[in-house]
Amino acid sequence: MTSRFRWSDLRLPLMLLLITAVAILSSAVRLVILAITPETEIGQFDLLDQRYFLNRTGMWLHVLPGLLFLVLGIVQFMPAMRRRSPHLHRWMGRVALASGLMSALALYWLAFSLPAMGGALTIAGTYVFASWMIISLIAAWWAIRRRQTALHRAFMIRAYAIGSAVATIRLLGIFGEMVFGISFQANFGLWLWIGMSLHLIAAELIVRQVFSVTARPVLRSVILPLPPER
Image (cartoon, rainbow, N blue to C red; front, side, top):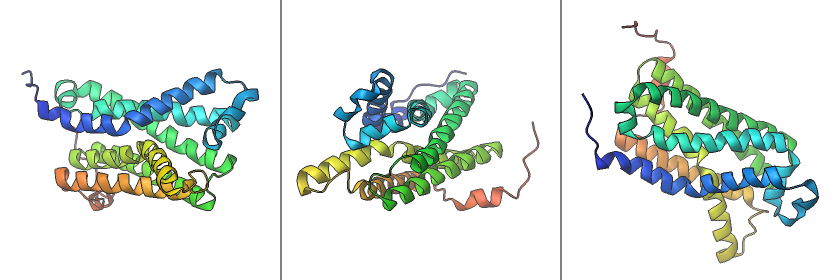
């Protein structure tokens, strides 16, 4: 039986598209810039963008999978996709999971190999939020293995909130510099923590309102056996 399309199915994907549009576009632009800009011309960019050229391999491993994760995430949160094409939803989910993990893991390398813009606050924030994204992705995979669909979606929302925060961090930094005269580059670590925290708060509000799910059930599910195959 073919499921009927509902306009309400587009609310969450459209909201995610609105939030991540800047991140998706900026990531795509950075990939092009990384591909076509020679080393001798990196001085034309600001310090944040210059760092992308200091470890091109690490940036490719971070930005390209991250872009794929953001795009697939919008599609994956469409209820119509899950209802009409569950097999495609599962395969796209595997790709999104692998992409998110690779992008987050690449941040460890970048944080270790590149000079930290914003100092220790930036380094600490990078490790904390990259780790939470990895934990959320693994928890989402673990939950769906146990057919805990609501818990799976809750942790995917948490992971997506972290992955999409890059645009918010930039916008906050630009706003702070223009309105309050706070240097974006010198205070990048501060904006990183604020932007990530805002996204995680929003994610928790969505999770608790829509799914009424906290992080605790996944801890119990670790010790429970998988349900029998049907």
